[in-house]
Image (cartoon, rainbow, N blue to C red):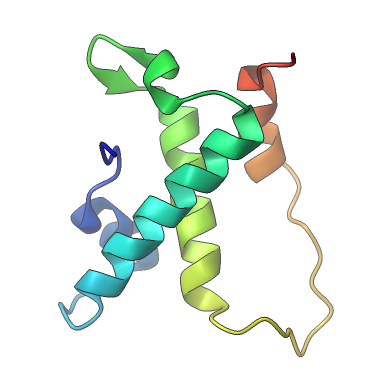
Length: 98
């Protein structure tokens, strides 16, 4: 699978300045991209234009990966509330309905 987000881009998004988690971050990028593809019901390659993935889709991948990095366990101890105008807002225009 081609990766559209680099580890350095995700580290900048997460404000990480060490290399300890690089392998883990790489795995999160793969998982996040797969998750976004499932949400959109289409391969990311279909959204590439001039060899670049749409910036909204790239940001959505970063949001998913960051969420997985911050919440490494399946249980939340706070009352999570979705942030408006983030993941769903970024992906909605690109969902391919069958």
